Figure (tube, rainbow over the protein chains, first blue to last red):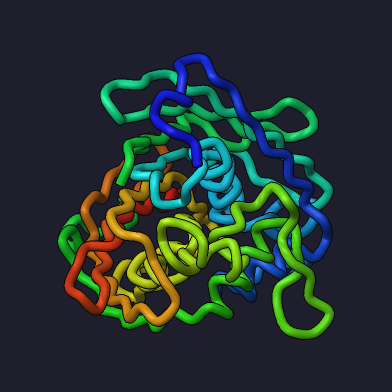
Length: 135
Length: 159
């Protein structure tokens, strides 16, 4: 596992996830969020979208996974926050990019962005805090 | 303001959730590029952390077994927020509602077999322009009475 000295300000990391047509349904089943806007294209269109939109918390989960991939241990993540700024739709390819912005003692701070294939932010203000010390 | 400020402090729960390894695996498959379930399923891709789904790898980890990915918190901690958004007393139009903001504070890893209890409270009701903000703060504890995760969930309603 990565050690504290392996974390350096300026480190970058990323995760790319594609929204295949079944992803909102898989996420509904796994999370319990069956809001019709995520599983019924007619409801999505009535709300002004091309079809269903992905659950924001699925994108949030990708954000979390991006941090965990960098941190090396799921239990190191202490805090994660983000604002949802643009709906994610079927066919979108979301690129999450993270950067280590501070290492103070064993506290590590990360900033992240999440953009679709058109370069539009789907999340903003994404920040994470972690503890990288030995347990 | 479409939501009456008298509802500030309104509470929901506690809601109980018993965690199984199957739920964790399904969540990991769904969010990790795989397919959940037991028929026609497929595991998450190699970018997903093995300690959250691979029993062998997890056994050899410092945790000694599978731990849920942090974002699994949404499955058990969302209920007070969902109840608030659909509470007839608040009379929110859910078709005009979006999940606007999310924050989690993770205190303790979640493991298969955990019995979790989540309570929530409306902690902010605010009007900004033609938008209403409804914030629900949730607290989840496990069967040992330990704080597992704190969540701050914000809905935005267009008026």
